[in-house]
Length: 374
Image (cartoon, rainbow, N blue to C red; front, side, top):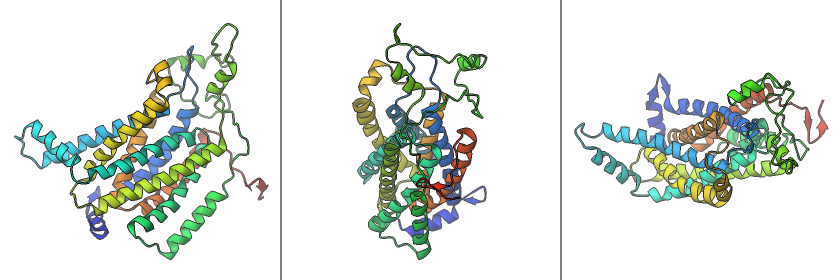
């Protein structure tokens, strides 16, 4: 399918008087902002006051993200197929048609971007665990540059002068973002009196509000061995260099995966809806997410505790938003292109910045590289 045909189709498709292309871009912008913030909170929120508090394993979150996305896309794909079949058609015919569409033609090509998207999701968790939400959001906009380069190399696309200027300004803006010099940053629990918003995790958290002076101590023995590990659990430290490296790597991997996915969508001779493509992506993503992430990386630790350790409504909300983002990205690529998507979501920086200042006491500075500009 040619790019011009895709553009005409996007213009013709309207929903509530708004083009599907613009609607997807707006929703993706809002999703990006909300996801970064909820993801950040999920990595710093106070631990349960149990005898063995733990944070959730990011590998399980990445895996469940793909499971949830697969379920949603399978449901929509089945609905699309059912609309084209006779009402009297048996369920076996419906599922066999779905299987034929998913595992046919060039579906195997989706294994490459699927693995890359899984790696990107994993790197996002590493980055957000070591950076604040606003800094990650700004750094993540570097994705526009590799996206443009991969679009030129893989899609033979050319950029206009204004777009090159915009790319240069974006790169300059990311380069001058001041990153805190401290290698270790302590994060106070969100029931600290200075915090402007407290989101209780459980009924036990509500009870503890009546006695803020007694903070829980998680003792492992009568001699309190392992106190340093306990403090790190409650107040996780940050490695700024690791966070930046993970964010840059995630940008590059995401750009390559998105452009390659766009290339498959717009050059494939196999007729498949965007929902079928999402089913293929999610299916092939399950294998690296489970076998590499869950079993190989965290398998031993998960076996000692359990798969859903540290899970609560915040973690499930994070997984839901991440799944929604994956679906919206594919829709934006289908109806628009990667460069337009990347520029449109840049406004999420401002949203995340404002909310970070309000919720997480993020402080704006006027210095660049340690030099005061005032």
